[in-house]
Amino acid sequence: QVQLVESGGGLVQAGGSLRLSCVVSGSIFSINAMGWYRQAPGKQRELVADITNGGSTNYADSVKGRFTISRDNAKNTVYLQMNSLKSEDTAVYYCYVAGRATSRDYLRGYWGQGTQVTVSS
Image (cartoon, rainbow, N blue to C red; front, side, top):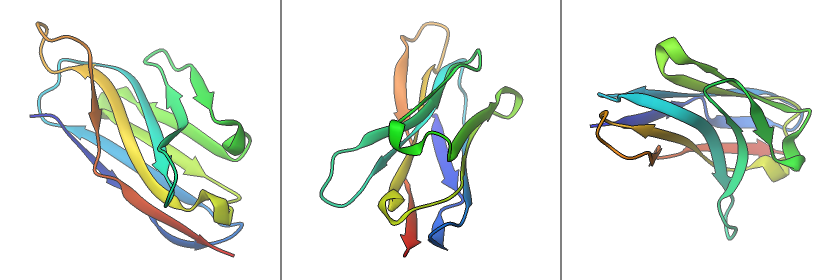
């Protein structure tokens, strides 16, 4: 069974930094895109950043220049380095992976349980 385990969230002051990690555990045949979404109270879940298995990245305009996504394919891990954090970055951050559990499976999405990031002003 494929599981995504996130870590690195917490409380930080505005202007500070955090690094989120997400490890894909269990048996997975292949991983395509990996990414991070977030959901603030009363708002819809939104894409923060994603990265293809070739290393191409995509960022929400609100985080460009402050956040960096990266991945370690050997470790089935995706990271999100968050710098210059603002109060509006406060949200639950979810890891997302598009992959196949076996060679016979279709490509599907997997979600982590989320990690809270709180930025105090």
